Image (tube, rainbow, N blue to C red; front, side):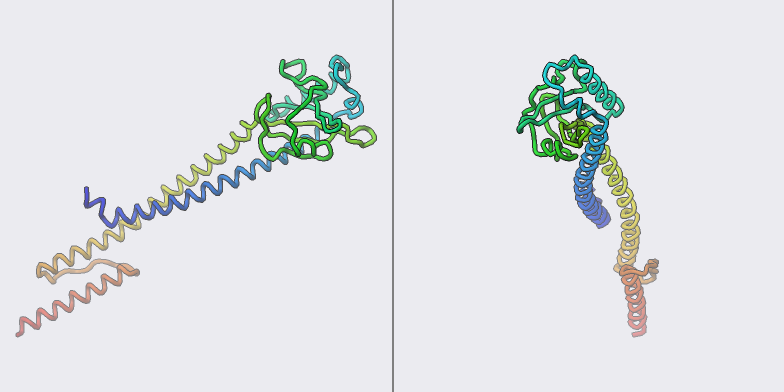
Length: 270
């Protein structure tokens, strides 16, 4: 057992595999982190695009005059049903809603879930957890830099301004994607990278194993020849055909055997 553990073959294979694992591990973490960032940026761009498209479909004039207590108005129901249809058409969207900003105080106008869920926001309900990206959404399309957490869960949100007939920004539409959807996609990519690197390590290990076996095989031949010579047997043939340093060693070994034969022959003559 000790012979196997301390053998050159074991050391070579272990060293190469360790080197590959270190390089592959570093590559994996770097690639995975960069991919996560790229995926999140892609999701942010997608949310901004969807929010901008939805904003053009909402009647800004009707929305701008809705206030607390207007839940029963037909204009409210029309916009609410529009948002509900939009959310139902995209499984990645968790929430769709509209907001207004009055002197820095942000409040809900129409929530797609109103009338369907008990925790849906009502017109006039304040939203306290504002951030720069949300406020930016009242003027141009934007998306949160990272996941936000509130009473409705952890989401990645995109925003776009809603305009009235005169082109004035009167509100915004918010599109929320549940964080688990983004994380699920990130994990899928991470597992794929992990699988590819794992297979690459196995293939590399197999190639290294085969390569090291050929080296050890030829070294063993040289060692056997040296053992025979140490016993006084000079009728040995070095059967190592390589073009590398081991091949050069084998040629030197062959020359040494030939020199020993001549020396022994000269001794016999004396």
